[in-house]
Image 1: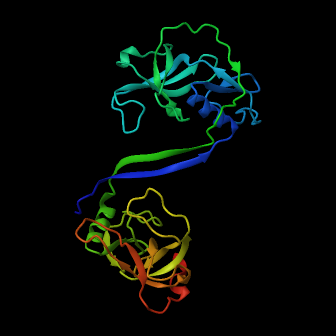
Image 2: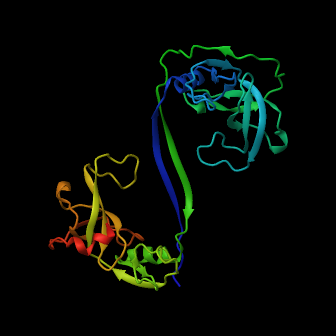
Image 3: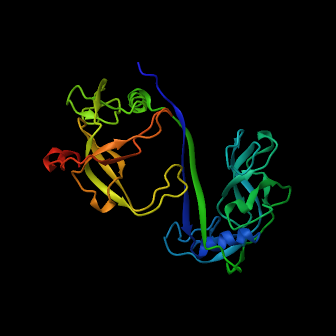
Length: 321
């Protein structure tokens, strides 16, 4: 029985977007200590604002200023804050309907414990010391003893000096991945520069990487089959956008990623093609792996390079395109 592996994994990328006039006004307003909403056709004030009416889909531009105080409509206690969350100590996630708004805003509430939080409690914004035009300009909410009163939202032009026109939001997911028996065997074989798949007992196809079950027949697979190391390019793409913020992938563009059918496999896997000009890569090209990272744990081939063999005949790989 192969030991089942597990490892922490991180999926991370920066999400960059431009802002239209409504979102630009909202975020610039936060930088200036002003909370803006937008009035819909039925008179509801939406905070955060949106650009189109959720009922009629008509464009919205009627901006209004709401209060920095509000009422908690619902909440959940967070006993163990994670990386990059608003507060480093336990806090409550809250939905707050700001005075003058008809919808609730999600943010953090700084409270000493869950017993200090309740639906209906009054809160106010605690502004960040340094504000840049982002939702994090609201550091958090804090308890507030004021009366809700009869606040009326005031019309606002949405015009500010030096408006925020774009944002970059880092998206990150941290998790522990357990690949299971079949892929653990596959990864362990890679440590020895071998590629192992599994054969379906019903249709006899060999799947690489193995999934533990045949995706065609739905039956469990257990028979291990070593494939490759050489293979055939079945299809490919030319990458013209440089990868950003990606560890160990500082590649000059353009470069080629391809689907490669390893000899003996009935499923193509993907890999980078090097050792040949990008504009000479073609379907049917015969390739072999170039390994790196010996002795440092499981590794995929760094890339594949041409073997110098004649191109494979299309009929030999057409079912794998």
